[in-house]
Amino acid sequence: MHSMNASKEASKLQLDAIRNCLIPKFLIPHMPFLNVGPDVNALLFFDVNNDASKISWARATNDREKLENAVHSDVHMIEGDVILQGQGTESQKMIPVMAEPPQTESDLLLVDWLDKIKYKTNKGIKLDFSSIDAVEISLQRLKEAHFQYPIKFPVWIHADVLEGPHGGKVRVDPSRFFQTLKRVFPKCTVSLGWTTGTHTDLSQSAYTWDMVMDMYELVKKWRIDDQPIVFQVRLSLMHNSVPQLKWLCDNIAHSALNVWHVKKDSVLNDDLMHIAYRFPPHAVFFDLNHAQYEALLYKYRHFSKEKISHYVQKRDEVIFRPQAWLKMGFYIQKDSILPSTEGIILTCPIVYIVTKSTYRPTTEVYIQGRVQFLNRKNREIESFHTGLNIYLRPTAYANFDQIVGIRCFLGVGGEIEIVGSNLPDSIPNFRKTARITPSSANCYRFQITDAGDKVIFQVSSLHDCITLESVIQTEDMHLTLSADIPEKLSREPHPFILRMEDNNREGVIDELSVKHKM
Image (cartoon, rainbow, N blue to C red; front, side, top):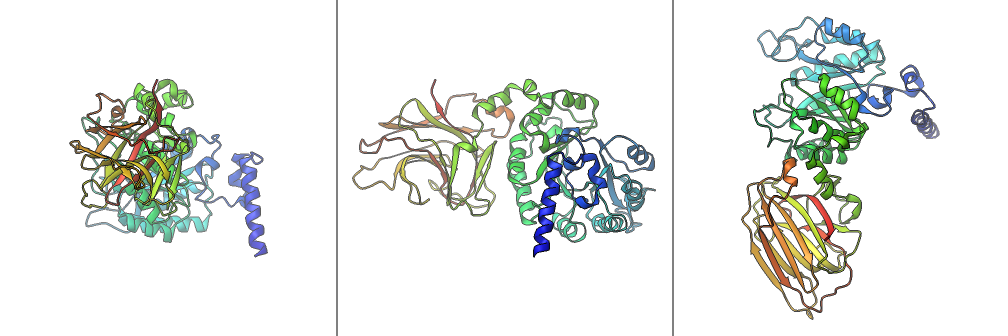
């Protein structure tokens, strides 16, 4: 036990020495006592001042000439695509080679590719798999290479494990991929992506909330969030995707994005700047292979605010501030509250969020937000029961099912209700209801004003809840419901509370804030 504790303490001192710049980063690969291995974080290994945008790439080094050029260049990471010899043909053999579909043959074996690189300890590698058949035998070859000559540089293992925007069928089964990875070569950076495609009009395209939640659940299921993880995303699909992917990275430890670009794709400069603005330097890599975008990123990576669009500026005005809210209820339950700077997801009714500040009823203060309901459990909704509660003037809220105050309910089916919640018998009953026509987006924007003698509940049914442009409120609220409030109800300062009413839907809530009228 003593030797184990001593070893842990030594590792801690070594890591502190690196972080405090007592050991130059360029010496790290040459110092065996630091135990640098294939799972070393690229930002720790390379001397890039913790800025992932400075990591450079050699892409698709699948022939000897490209590999030779990459090895002798100043790039940091060398990427190659791995298939089986004769992949998908009658002559397929269990020999990993370097090629990208639709190619089926190559004269460059994976073992030769590794031999060329592994002695160049100033490079990292990324192996990209587009077929599950090639994964196990390739990782076995990588393991053998590591055994023969210990790898002391970053190793990324990539596969597209979920279907994404305009993407085709997943060719790498995620269960087999993770099982094999954990068994054969677990010490690495896991790079995960979605299959993607393109379209003549990408204005409505995005990595949706369902897509990123699928990825979140996959990572949690296979318990790989204790090592470096990178989520690979396509630049041309990022226009409407930043909030969802920022949420994903905020909720998966040790994770980052890798933004890659396909030359034929059309991209707005604003989108590149939006990514740079929202993600800190250590949280997003860029494999762009495009001189103009690389120059723009080099110039404005740390000054991106100067180049963001007015839509991003508008979102700043309504962006969710997690630090202004408290978690309540049984929030220690796994995945019950999933916050981010871009929004928060409430998954069940036994948890809720409460404003840290308290507010006195007045016409000058209102709470506003936007909620999108996700049907991830394929359940039927219950009228006036499946939806989001916003509580005003709560005087008791230690128990999630006995919150005392005024309950404003917004249902998935467009139901709207203002009613007393667990109020004493001495306070007269009051209840007002209305209904708004829901849209296929299952998304609503709301604004509630507690004026003291009455509560005013305004709701809009939104047809667009995913595009960046949807942050602009283009019209007035569609429906206004007002209810008179009994005088006996306390008018002392109280917080606001948000809570799902049942388990039939999950709520993605953004643009949530308490505002003072100007």
